[in-house]
Length: 268
Image 1 (spheres, rainbow, N blue to C red):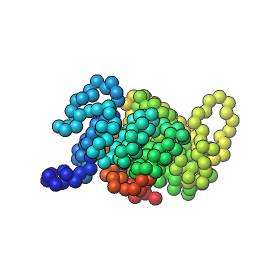
Image 2 (cartoon, rainbow, N blue to C red):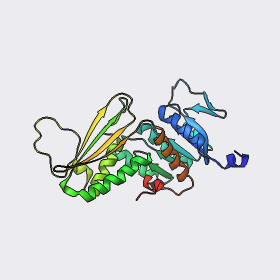
Image 3 (cartoon, rainbow, N blue to C red):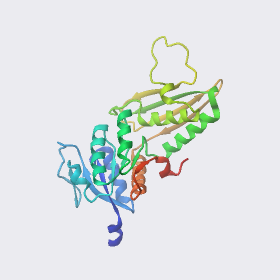
Image 4 (tube, rainbow, N blue to C red):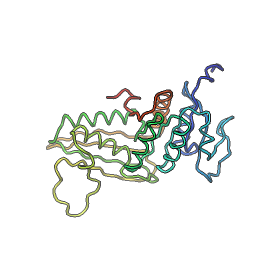
């Protein structure tokens, strides 16, 4: 790559740079023509703080120092860490891409408020295929209508902290939108005991955890004598990282605001 091309590349701060997603993101940044690694952030006390991940990039736990000279952050971590780092990014005027799930209603509102100062993308899933699945789920829900019952199934690795997953809730929200419903009013997250007949317009979400599964989601529309199933299975985390890096390149240089991932992929 020519020297002038390197100089024009935007610098990315990767949060959790030594974790499973962090490693995948760094690999995708390395092959993206418009981006390069600018900084690597890890939690305080991490045993590899101070180690070099690239010739000029040393792992740090100082977010303010890491943000210096960077153009965009990519963050797949936990809510408390994401909000701390997002506040620092807003103060520094650095764009922010995050796939952190498990945020409360109040925490999501905080993300939206900070997006009034910098450009932000917060998505449950950065896979192009998963976002297409969301589009398909919304349209299937709209076209099939109330005669088909909606049920979602998801499984992730045993270390995943939040349940249902952010992706499962994203897909359930797509189903609800297709029916002009509120997900909060219709979601069913557990069934046990004598619960009676299935409520009309319920959207069931069933969660399993085990092994090292990166993620599997099935959206079912169950009618009388027939069923439609829409399925996405992940074998690796590479496509999540690839989508996040694509979103980062798209976001740099845009005005403040909370941008939907649909815009990055051209979905409507």
